[in-house]
Image 1 (cartoon, helix red, strand yellow):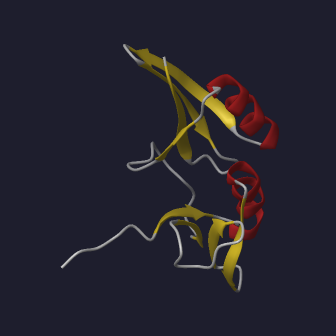
Image 2 (image 1 turned 60 degrees about the vertical axis):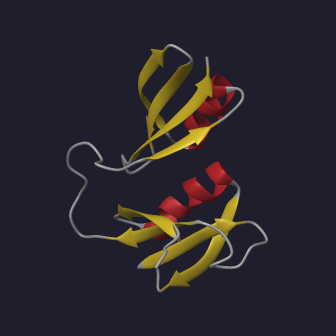
Length: 120
């Protein structure tokens, strides 16, 4: 038996509103919208199931504490990507550097953490 990653789901208060950030951040589009309660975001021009999706799921409780799982993104020009994401509504939370790698910890408009890395 084998499985493959279909997507990563982000809990949030307003999936349609948060989709505005993530579709712009990743150049994705809404691949499926289930009454605004659950959305699948897919790379532009792909159908749901053809690639890994980002899903947004409405939950009643607010985010509390640090994410136990988060997404990491890689960019050649980390600082430019961080600036672009901040312009879309992200917040910089922290910066880290270790031998050979640097990353920035950000939060989306609802406070969900993610990182942007680059070789250092």
